[in-house]
Length: 199
Length: 216
Image (cartoon, rainbow over all chains, first blue to last red; front, side, top):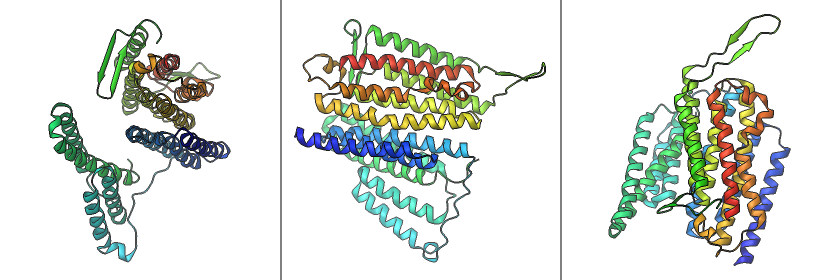
């Protein structure tokens, strides 16, 4: 087991060294940002090498912190370069302007609901992003934020059930799964709409 | 741990917080400076025009001030977390939070040079998460625990020095804002109490990582 771990560690460190060499050689700021995402993957790889459920629990916060830093840096990049993205008008393709995006995103969302949990959230969020990208976005962010808040509350309730009434674990499990599904869906669809009309 | 046995250990689920004289001191420092950031008004910088006796004061707009104050307080909270937590992975998470907040404090200044410096610092902070998280994961892999109380008991296998080096490297990268003092733009940014928070949080996390490295 130790040998496998060492080999994996060696491979990941090799990847890390390659990523950092690329980072050093790159001069363009935007490309540096993209390479940083690559380097971030290396740290997730080292965590994943643990290979236990602890690794899974550690990857999530690591990933969230990485994404948060990446979003913050890209905002700074936009400000620094004085870039103002115009509002995204939607794709100008005949099929996309018909009902195709609606059907595809409904399929994705339903499939996401069946999967549930983190993966399901990802799939459903992809469906929402696809719909928003093909339609342009003028949707109400308040609703997304409210959904996010509700899912958070559901998650906390589930957490408390786990803590104080462990015999109801199945209920808590389902609540948590629904909560994280909503949460990830909303998060991903927000990320998809973050460019666009900044004041 | 530096100093005597911790006299207060709080364990709640995954959370592990302990107070020893060392961590308590650092915590109080962070608390006091967070209160300062909460209460004080931003300094108004004065520039002197060369060749005459004129000077002009830089105005700080209210939204900018609010944002930087928020970031400074968030930075204070993150450093408080980083100095009292007894869980290695939570420690690394708090450290990277300190890094983001430091970037945010500086980046809110509407000045191209300052934002350039903030961006470069952000690049360093983001790449520092690799050795930081990597070290935490390897510590968990070699010792089987992330709790500093467990690690202190000396029954756990020793962590390789290079892993400790990685951890320190990560913390240095995240808290390197003061080292950017060479980039004068970063500290010429107006708004005194908030920039102090960058230096203070870096100092606190450097002090804390010494303890962590001694324990593991």
